[in-house]
Length: 446
Picture 1 (spheres, rainbow, N blue to C red):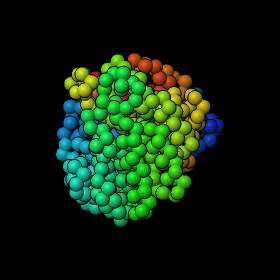
Picture 2 (picture 1 turned 90 degrees about the vertical axis):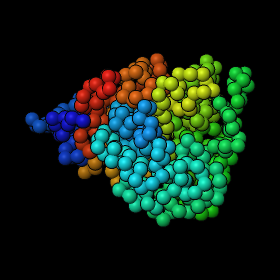
Picture 3 (picture 1 turned 120 degrees about the vertical axis):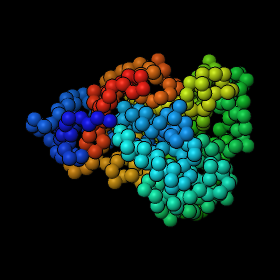
């Protein structure tokens, strides 16, 4: 990755958190100055921020980078390029790689790949159990003590279904202030399931995935968390019932946090009517009532974060009949636009709220708040994203940085655009393009 000629920037007339406009100077990796009428010298790149919103760099607690093992779908390099274009400065890479990230050696490999790529900070998520098999705890302590300093553990893609194993994991991570991030899916209730269980699945003749399969695990795990006084993060909440359980748990003082994905904020199971496998995802797209519930939960703070669950797949795993297709969607480059469309443009959230759910809260939950999700203030690390809320674009997955094209927003017009992303004061994205080679593996990066 090439380095821009300047590492000093002056952002003029920007609106931090969507508020009052000011100038912001970035120098030596930090926010150096805020105020009106700031002057630039010959070593400073000036960016006109009129009409633009300045936010802390986005933090994703839920990214699948696929490396090692599935480099045909994504690599740390391509996935982090996509993240930077989406306004992210940090991502947490899930453990369902091949080999699984269940040892200190594998998580350190992922961490070093992210450091060498340099587009965003990559924080590996360690597996809860060996090989994601749900039987024996993985090397949680060794991963926590490794150079990667793992603090989040998840078997995402699979549920830690055994309550005894889940209890032990919750107890174990307390020793180093870790968190267990659960993929809430009761396996016996979802055998051969293809989509949400409801009217649409019945009409299409596809095996249904009942909401209770998620809700039963969420309910069990918040009670286990209360019992052992640990920390739980509920991944990709998708049902109204799960929102209510989490709201109840928080009311009891249980240390539980939760996330929702952009696609569960935006899309419903009606999208399955065309049998297009791009809309096949785990957990499945739910009903309009569930979409309304997760939007309300995000707005009132019951749901803490937006996590992309960026899940790239090669064409052959998606370009096939529905039953044979893999579960998952890409989402890093469209997440901020979807949140703007569903939450900001509808009046349910402000840009300050967006900063909370896409930067501050995920940084705190992932224990990376020393560097990310910081206030936009003098002396703070310059991990920032500059966005244009007035822009509109038609999504073309082929023009995105990810190696995979399984975006559910293909040919949709979405609001907003990332103009610039800064990692410790160094631009990774300027004018909506990666700072570096404009071509990667034959794809224009825009």
